[in-house]
Length: 357
Image 1 (cartoon, rainbow, N blue to C red):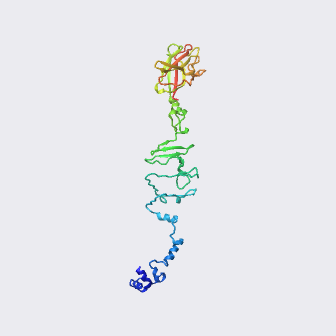
Image 2 (cartoon, one colour):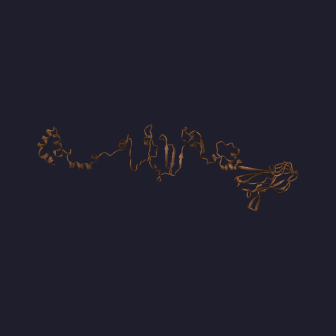
Image 3 (tube, rainbow, N blue to C red):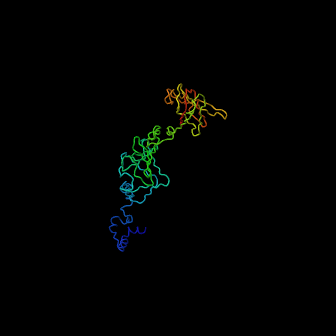
């Protein structure tokens, strides 16, 4: 304070100091005034007022380019708080508009220590909002997740090249398209087996000629491979002619056929009937208690072998299984009853085929 007081009244003193130290301040003193040498401005009061009112006197605001230049090339960039990207453009973005590693190569890595949350919010603007993965700034979505949780994968003709230790899930171009998994050894497995086109029908399972479809347990049970047949020899082919009567033969249902249904019946003779039509009923006897059983007829139309014929498949009237009594349980007794014997018929056999419903 003492020095400033001296400056205005003692120019000689200040000048001598300047001369002594070889500092040329004459011009500075003349232009800005001795009292303001420490400020380096023309007038402190005037300048403060001007700085507050003049936009040009303030620092220039960062532009987007300035902000990018400020962080570009940094080894790390630590950001705290909410980071928001707003883009109202609906056109396909170019390479320059993406966050990327480098211009031609590089990896963009996000290190997440808890959860990475990407919020797909339609905000009532669209019903088709998706998280999308695209290639080469194209408008083709390779992969997408919708706001409602559906996953979309672009279909293609074949899997990519095999990579050791990795598998591929991809959608194969077809009509309709198909979901596949490819192992690292190139083995391809079709995954979308819920569609009818992926399953073999019962007829296809029977013929065994379909190479690209799978067989379901239900389809197998409904095919010929899911059936069991009993062929019961009721009378000796070289013995006496058959006679009428119940319980001419019997078979017991095993536990492996519990709940199965009678689906087909046939009968045949080794010696035909010269007159009359041999007629057979199949009877189911089920345990009611330790000392009693309940019997029902399993055929609503009985098995017949026409006169002079060997097999029921040639009969004028085909046998019909009673749908109300076709089921069998473990331990059921199945009896063969001969209602009509014909004349001279020998070697009667009855075939019954059962299937899991």
